[in-house]
Length: 117
Image 1 (cartoon, one colour):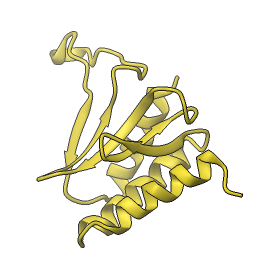
Image 2 (cartoon, rainbow, N blue to C red):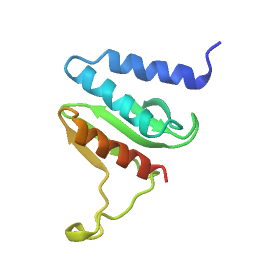
Image 3 (cartoon, rainbow, N blue to C red):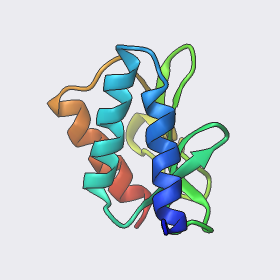
């Protein structure tokens, strides 16, 4: 019998598989990058899209969406830090993207790891 985590993972993978190309390939890669950066995160559907939390019943920390634009975000439950510099006290919480390259994947991994500290 599948565990709740396994069922939730399958729902996330099914959601991604139901997307049109080229978004499906990009979103599958985003999922893989998030899980590689923080294997302790548990995926589940959150507001109709993939979200990631420390357990099946804890708050979502990281999520991504495929609306008119693809985006990565961190929730208010994540570890949030002001950007500093010329951004002052603003706290970045969402990023739009069209595809993933090595530099972007590295930045996503950094964002994910910082969100769960």
